[in-house]
Image (cartoon, rainbow, N blue to C red; front, top):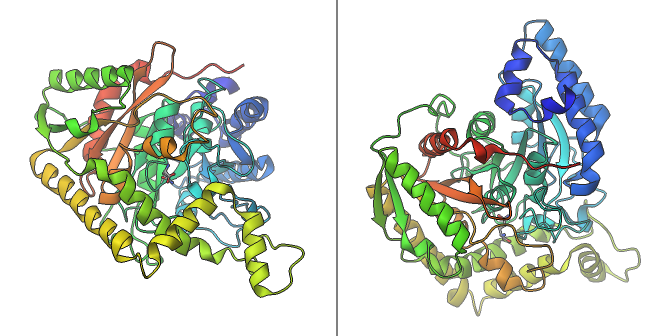
Length: 489
Ligand code: GLN
C-alpha cells in the first residue's frame, strides 16, 4: 500500500485524501520511506527533514478532520528546489557560498503552498545558482537520472525533476531562466511548466537573471502541473514584475475540445543538431494533433539562431549584478584569513563560487563595462526585441507552437561538463521562450529505443497557459505510456 501511494498522481492523492481513504501522514510517510531507501542512488535531494514534513502532514489531517481542508492539494507533498526561501530551511542555491545559510523568511510561492495545506518535503539539488543544464554544477554532488543512473537528469532543476520521476514526491517546484524546468522534465519523462513571465511571484527565489526567471511546477501529468500552478500563480506586491491579472481555472480548461486549434510548426527549431529519435517523436505528435482535428500551420521564427548568444549576454549581465550581494560580509561564506575589506570580498567569493558561476560573473561584468555596453548588452537587448516580435507575429496565426524540448535525450554525465559551449547549445529550444516572456510546457513524447524519455514542448502566448495545458493534456490522454515510471530497486 505505502509503495502504491508513491505511484499515484497528485490528483489521485487529492481524491484519496478527500475521501479519507488515506491520511496525509500515511501519504507523507510513504514518500519519506521511499526517499530514504532510494535517494542514495538518485541523489535528488540536498536536504530532507522527515519530522518537519510529518508535522505538516499531521496538521493537514487535523484540519481535514475538523472540516477545514484548505483546498485540493491539502496534505499532498511537494519538493522545492533549493533556491527558494522557506523559513528555517536551507537555501544553498547549490553553492558553497550559501552552504550554512538558513532562510529567515518564506518566499511568496512558499507562502502559497503552505496556505494550500501542502506538505513541503525535500530540498532539491540544482546547478549552482541555477547555472547549468545537467545538475553537475551543483557544489555538492550531481543528481542521477532515475531512468539511467549514469545519465544526467538535466538542469538546473535536475533534483526537482529526478525527485518527481523517482516518485519521491508527486510534485516539485523548479525555476526556469532558459529552460531549467522544461529540459530536466524532458530528460526525466515528466511534465514541467515555464509560466508566463510575471505569472508567479519571484519574491523568495534566489535571483539569477531577473528579467528571465520564473518559478514553475513539475509533476507526472499535465493535470498535476496545472493544479500546482493554480496554487502558485497570482499577483504579488512584493514583486514589481508580477502581473496583476486574475488566475484562470487551469484544471477546468483541461477537458476542452482541441478540434480546430491551430498549432504552429517552425522549421527553425528542426534543423541541424536535432537527434533522429527526437525528430521522430516530434513527427508522431504532429500526426496526433492532425488526427485530433487541429490545424497545423507553418510559421517562421527567423531569429532563433541568435537566442543562445543573446541569452548568454543578458543572463551574464544580470547575474553578475544579482550575485554581487554574495560578498562575504552579510549572509554568505566568509573567508577565514583576510587582510582588508577588498581581500575579504575577493577571497570569500573565490572560495565560495564554482567555476561556471565565476565564468558568468566575469562575462557579465565584461559586457556591462562602459566601453563594451553598446556593442554587447544594448545590441543583445535589440535582438531580444526581434525574438519577442517573432513570437508575437507567430501567435497572430496560431494558438500554440510545437517543438522538441531538447535536441537529444538525456546525455551521460561527464559528456558535456567540460565543454560549456556544447552545454549551452543544449538549451536552444527553451531559451527563446524566456527571452520572449511567453509560456511553455514540456511533456513526455515517448521513449527512445533504449528506454529514455523524449520530451516535447508546446509554447503558448503570454498568459495562454490554459491553451497549452488543454492541448498537452489531450496528447497525454491518448498516450498513457507517456506516464510510465522508471524502475528503481
Ligand atoms: N541551462 C541554462 C543556463 O545554464 C538555463 C538555466 C536556467 O534556466 N536556470 O543558463
